[in-house]
Image (cartoon, rainbow, N blue to C red; front, side, top):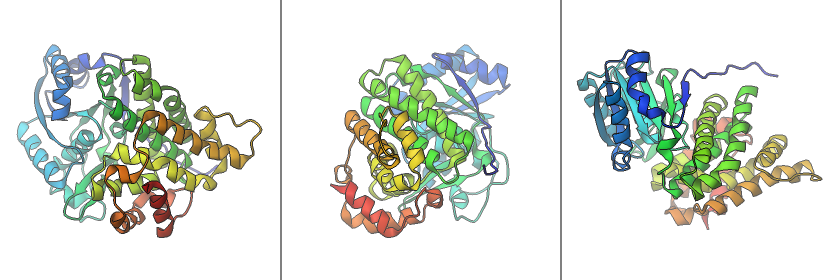
Length: 387
């Protein structure tokens, strides 16, 4: 067994209705005086922020709500939000929403103690994070990104049509507050694509060349929970058992990929998000089985374990046949969830392929993908997933 380091600095608190106690958690347990609630208008419209405000008021917590965050946050949006946070006088940030608000909040908090624009700190930029960020707590409203547990903030550069990240341990949130009750109103399609996003994190981290025994345990547990509960969460959004299992699966998949890494699915999906403006969860949902098909030979034993975790019967099969059942299982899951299965359906065109291939090959975690891939390999995946 190789030496390894496992990191999980974020505290997890999980409970149905836990958000009603958010004021007491922030004020009484942590001693914060004023909270800056970072969210987007969709979360406000869904009524979730009203519930958070009630919890803050019940704890007699001073707060301000900022709801101007957007999906796929840009450099300009992050810098503007960071400036408003600075003027607010808040001593803690509470991010409420999916991956985009949480990623934005990570960068905003970092910029309170590290001077400059977020552009300076993006991968390949001129600065590195030096100082500890303003404290950040997160309430995820989707079961998908796992961003509440990770060190990365993914930001869109509109000028270059790229998505790159600021990644540093100082960006890791202090606490993740998991309240499945806040997720019961999530639309079926968002439930499906964010759930597939979580599955992608779990699978990619499990087969990554950087995987370790602890990340493996978390990744495989997440795969099993998603296989057992995602269909129910999509078909009956009010089912709190399914929502709770998916919420936990998403969070531990986030821990798994922070430690184990990701791979080609995210390399392609992140680039497609920047080039074709496809939502991250949708891109991962679509690409996962095609990339698994290419990667399966990289670790037959682990893909066999994935197949079993997803409920496939592999008795009597060869190792290769059993491993390939993992791909079959994910195709069946995607079909059952009615997520897009072809790139053509989501606005990707063949003339985008060269830019997508270039961006994928530049993805920093492609090196830990279980198979070494060439530009021709990426092109072949895109062709098979196209139509």
